[in-house]
Amino acid sequence: MRRYLSYLIPNSNYHSQGLLLLRIIGGLMMVFNHGWGKITAGPEKWDRIGHALTDIIGFEFLSTFFGFMAAFSESVCALLIVFGLFTRPASILLMFTMFVASMNHVIDGEIPELAIMYFAVTLVLILIGPGKFSLDYRYFSTLQN
Image (cartoon, rainbow, N blue to C red; front, side, top):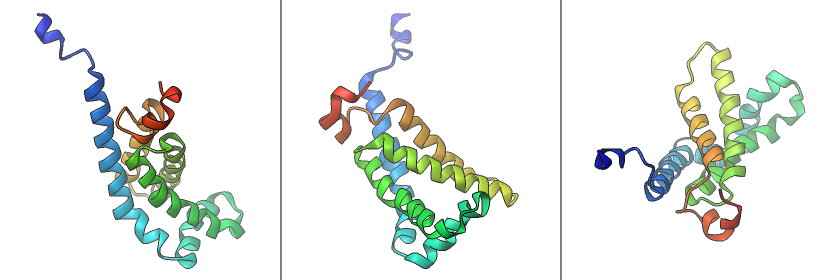
C-alpha cells in the first residue's frame, strides 16, 4: 500500500522539473509564435495591436504604447519566463496581455483557446513560482516559497 501512496506524495524535484518544462515550452512558443514578429515589426504594428485595449478603455493616444507593451510582454517577458528570471513580474505582464487578447477574441465572437492557455500558464507561474531550476531560485532563493 505504501508503494502506491508514493505516487500521491509530491516530489519537489518532479515539481521543479514540471515547472521548468512549463516555462521553457510555454515561453518559447510565445516568443517564436507571437512575440518576435510583434516586437520587430515597429510602431505601425504596435499601434494596431494597442487598439485592442484602447478601443475598450479609450485613451486612443496610448495605443502605440500599449501595443509596444503587448509586444514586449510576448517577447522579452516570455524570454524572462524561459530563463526563470523575474518570473512573477514577467508573468503578470504577460497574463494581462493574454487577458486583453482573450477579451478581444470573445468580443469578436471567437473562442480564444490559445490566449486562455497562455493565461493559465502565467497564472500557474504567478501562484507557484518558477521552481528550483530557475535564475530566480539561484539568485533570490530567500524570496521563494
